[in-house]
Length: 343
Ligand code: SAH
Image (cartoon, rainbow, N blue to C red; front, side, top):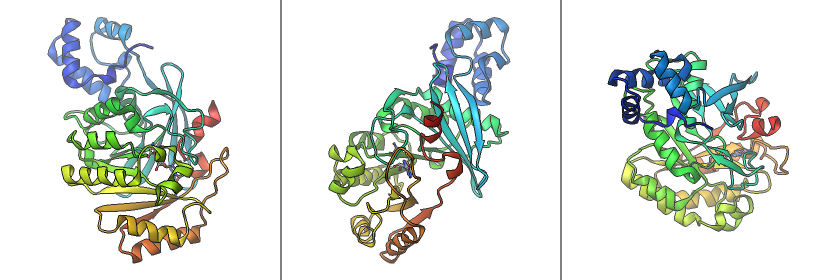
């Protein structure tokens, strides 16, 4: 695979164009073209410079291979092919407040969560910062957005992969995503979801990127968490809560817990009470979602009624919480399902 031009920051593009004997304004043209979701072969630069770039860089690192549209709610699922033939997926959701794109950060995942489809074939490779950015730029263009008038207004790192298992690329992606003059999506409109890699959570607190830090909790004690999330054998919930508190101290951002409701596993009233006990007084919010059942796994979703009761108990206990609709279930909305069906 050639290098990825979208990996370069604006300053790095200036250096590259100098190297290629071009003037500084060419770097701006390249930067703007890429941010518009253009391929190198479409950039408005002299043909010799385009050819020089194409020798070193992938023309279109992230191609749309397939688009599925949910008949239930209009959610779109994009299957992308990468330059080396790997497949990844992303979801585009329209909301009243804007449109959210869910991006993948790795091909596959090695965290091994028992309810998740992304992890079935393990981790194949990390995505580069530019590949993650190209997911956003490609969809923004496909949805009719421009740099100034974006179709993608919010980004969530909740597709395949564990963002903090690909730390450097993800941080670089976040900086390039919010860079001035580019697509300029502010960290406030970005959510990063982690299964709770504590050292990276702590490191991230000092990066100066005040996004919506989201942690996949899915249990109220370490023993139960380890049944579905192998990472629980490495880091304790108490350590995760400590890292979240540090994030709040350093960024002023409250944090979010994801809690997927699985029948017979974590969805009883006693679990709701235990969760409230664990989180009481913390500046956090809980996102509940019923399991999106994955056919290769035996776990079952909690009943709608049980999910509503769980929410009610949390609210009664004074915990800020919402029960999310699971979107796009008719188009394999859960992470990794579409890719698995096409491999
Ligand atoms: N690796 C990151 C982000 C990936 S998934 C993480 O673990 O947070 C984004 C969210 O979807 C996580 O909370 C994850 O636990 C949840 N998830 C994965 N598979 C799911 C499924 N089948 N049904 C419901 N939620 C799921």
